[in-house]
Length: 289
Ligand SMILES: Cc1cc2nc3c(=O)[nH]c(=O)nc-3n(C[C@H](O)[C@H](O)[C@H](O)COP(=O)(O)OP(=O)(O)OC[C@H]3O[C@@H](n4cnc5c(N)ncnc54)[C@H](O)[C@@H]3O)c2cc1C
Image (cartoon, rainbow, N blue to C red):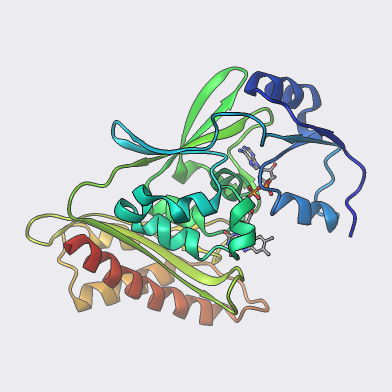
């Protein structure tokens, strides 16, 4: 299918992009990897009159540790996450997540910024960023604004980003020693969006007691879901079999899936329970290493 007519801009600097976004307001859309925007335009689900392609703006693609944060540029491709030695060695939850997004062709184009900015609860990074307690840096002509991830997803395909703002960076607190994470996703076939998926990040103290837990759920609500009750339940406990089982149940209780072609809602809740337990076991194993 061919998208409706639009005017295309390819700014080379952020100020140039901000001018265009301010000039055209809600009639303009930012283009990053185009892996969600272009299909939506082809299906007439999005009809921007102006497309502002930010791919030529230098300095928006990086993965680096700086101070207390891992910093990921908004335009960083999924394939760069997948092949980064830093991510591979220190951020297994991010690696797990990028590796199950779509297929290699999509991952070569799709960006982490686009994945979050799209606000799709079926995308994989939102739940992972909730588990990691990330911050989103939104930049506009007025400067930078830092948005805690738990305030970022507003409703279906809607985020806290305002017209004129570009998601320029994702900041992830560097987990202390004794931390581990994992992402478990069930999909109908390789490359598909999740029927349900669970991201888990835990930090243990020297006695194996859970100091901090982050749990995010994919595609079981109008936004990615932060399983706050399960997180709170885990804090201060040793992660034994009974505790992990109970956390799985609490996470399932917090999921609000709807029945669709991927299965009935009750089945998806059952999946969340099981995937939470599996992700917790893997995260625990990694935290102990
Ligand atoms: C066949 C297929 C399978 C897929 N499977 C999965 C999957 O399993 N899991 C998954 O997570 N995703 C999946 N995706 C989606 C893919 O990961 C998308 O590319 C991603 O969600 C959006 O990233 P993008 O860079 O392509 O963004 P674009 O498509 O360019 O943009 C998406 C939206 O975000 C906005 N936007 C983009 N970048 C910015 C920015 N920096 N600042 C502000 N707004 C911005 C755009 O205006 C647009 O509204 C799939 C896509 C395809 C085509």
